[in-house]
Length: 357
Image (cartoon, rainbow, N blue to C red; front, side):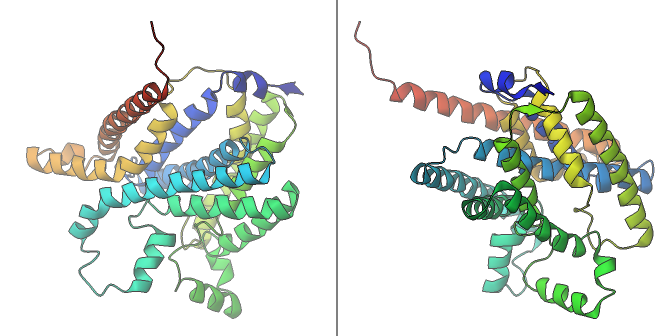
């Protein structure tokens, strides 16, 4: 048993976590671009339908860890921290909604009959654009885990959220098993009147946020890196086996949720905590903005390809399309991150008292 967290925490940064989150952001881009489709649909499935599914759970776990490690155990202070964190998520979501509103209009999302219930469902659960479900899921998941933890131990929270995850599995990758029961099929048919997928803030996010809570509360002595690496590789191999078997059985309604995501993501995150690497202070912000801006980057790349006659290279060739979208996403994310950092620095300078000469 060895200690790695304290040295990483001493500098106030988690370089390994930031690096893994950045890699996860590029996996999300891969899911939405299909980088290997030119070479084979099955190869692309292995990347986007299995490997890429590590990304969002990793974001949830990291968010849970970074939030819960800051709590003090003093109710009033912790409640303020929760409100502040929830407010930041809501503000980021509002900004993202505004960014993608023109694309919503362009796609014709408001052209048909729009109901208040449908708008609420999109706003509170499914997201107003195809990737924005993550933010309401994070908001709900953080609040759910926080209030569960006020009533029970960390292990209790893990138990409850695992049950929620099991239900979510039956509405996602294990849907083919659920529909063998008329009762379960009816239950899920009713659920899907209220949301499109079970990969949401009730069934998907909480267990990974709870794992972040567990990591934040655990003793600092952790298994050796070799043990964690072995656990990750075994879990990853099992995850590929699980994904391949479920696809062969034609069970998935969607392929976001797998059983072996839980040990694989947990082992990967614990490994990342041990990595003593230096990354740019902007890395955490970059991963966030790459995630949020990459669908806009897809539209920009397609627009450039159409205007320049380079569709065969920038769109039809899947790997070049992926690389182009990544490049535009990085440029946009870097611009936003630098602007945000500059504004923070200016606010800090304004808040400092003037010192007379």
